Length: 179
View (cartoon, rainbow, N blue to C red):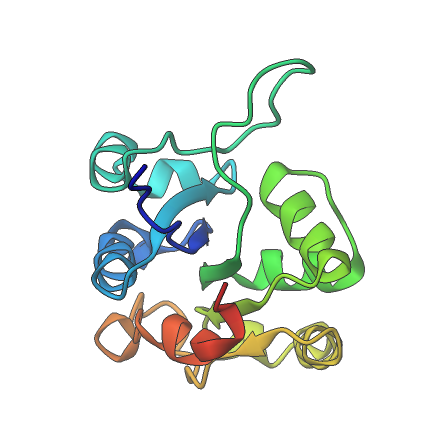
């Protein structure tokens, strides 16, 4: 019997940020590098993406809510996770151990499961100046989360999309996500 080798599976966690609609760039880059991909959106992040287009691109349903007991798992087990864009809210709640959404639950559990995880923060410099943000980044790094080099954009500019490197998530994960 000729079985296809299993491709590594990447979860892309999408948060509510203006650039989230461009997540297809990360999905395409991951697929070009041999990944199968599924998207988990925060509840607010769901409104920032074209879920039907994402589902067509990945072949998997976009997840944003817990499944009911006994329901089948709609996505395979993650070999790695990319959080892109990672918002101020998600970064702080994740570092504090909040699991009040499916996305945060997956992220909190990933650390204990040893799943390689990369985060691409996208926030403005006023949010980044809040002391909780630097503490949260430090905590996430101590947990082994790989953090991108993105520099926060000016407040009220909605900017930085041209400097946001979606593929940096894959570069950060590199061989750490090999199956």
